[in-house]
Length: 89
Image (cartoon, rainbow, N blue to C red; front, side):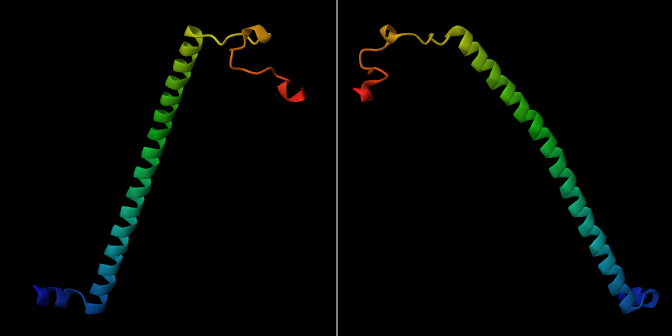
């Protein structure tokens, strides 16, 4: 088998051809990896957006169920809270 190839290609041509094949395969692998990274990046953005929308909806529902108490005078303070100007006295 080696003698048949030796008759068809010179050793220098065989080396050049093998280097070209290795180079093409390497570039193909790099292109495939770049393609996979782009596809997964696009998919991740939509998943992140879905999660953020779900979180936003949950927060809105929680706000509707438990509205924040209105800020008012000192009568609404808890017993352990100090007055706002305690440090001025």
